[in-house]
Length: 336
Image (cartoon, rainbow, N blue to C red; front, top):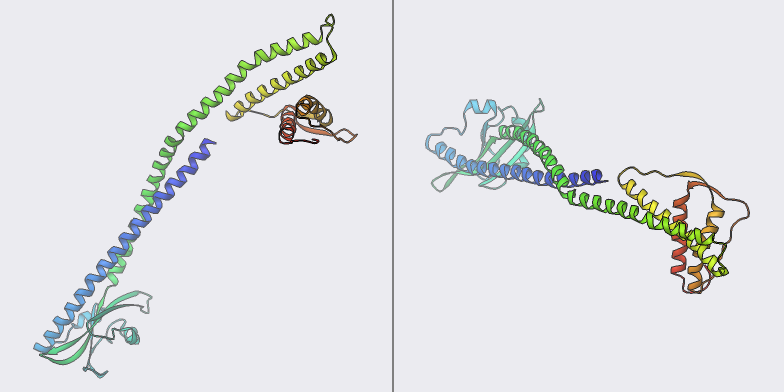
């Protein structure tokens, strides 16, 4: 019982700890991604301004041939206020055609930055940050410049970092499970001790009660067998009832001992063939006085043929006694 309780507590503790670890790791990943994206967007805005100033000053195109070939940085220039192409530094890249096909997803307003994802022919994922702004010569607009920056490396680096974070999280969750198992053991230790003391008390009390009950039973049998005394019929019936009740008390004491052994994992049922008709009549006979004291009529209706049950006689008797006693206790008048 306590092992199952400890296991349940361990699962609860581990679940709570795992939830906290997942929340922390997820929060770190989100914050890291947001921080990187914010930083890159700011750099993109500064890059567009810088490349525009260089283009006005020297006519130098925004990106180099090598950057285009590897797809690291790209540029696309249009005439101001139109779709007339001035310079195309996108088509020559590994994913130039895919980027041009996503023209509708490019920023539609100046000084805006967006990111898009696409896959090349080898199914490699590319992530591009796209910024747009005007190239100004004084107050006059010379061109509309789109700049593209590949952020795929961040994705693959972060993917590796996430894998390490997951592995570390699993390690900490396993450690948390061990700590949870230890704490669960500490938590149920007082309950285990209290339960042990309660079981010992039941066993000790049962042992102490057996001796006086045995003496009372012998005394009642001796009085019943005393033929020299002139007992009234009521006294004889009372002695008989006392002897039966003493026997039942002995059975209850034995049941308490059996319960203590069951709690300790050492209890067994004593199965045998029981004549239920006889057992029922005996039980009603011992409880008839209780019914008479409350002014109740106790009736029994049993089939004529014997009803044989395979069970523990003592526990069946306890069950019948509890049921009939409750019926008497909670009936104000009439018949049970």
